Length: 101
Image: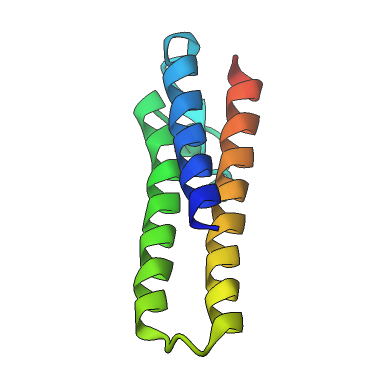
């Protein structure tokens, strides 16, 4: 599961790098904010998504070190949560790029 998480994180970064030149100066990211300029960010703001994925992965990895080795189910749940979060960030990133490019 750790490898899957790293692959998802690198995929996010790769998509940002590949789409960088074709991104507009502002793009939507913060959909929970009111419609308009408050939803917009600069292209560098897209790095928030892989950054959050990395933070979630590292936090779950830290919590894994605190859990006894006998708790296999809890360890698998933590890693699955991290993978799901990274996958959702990847889907969000792809949708945003498809929207503006």
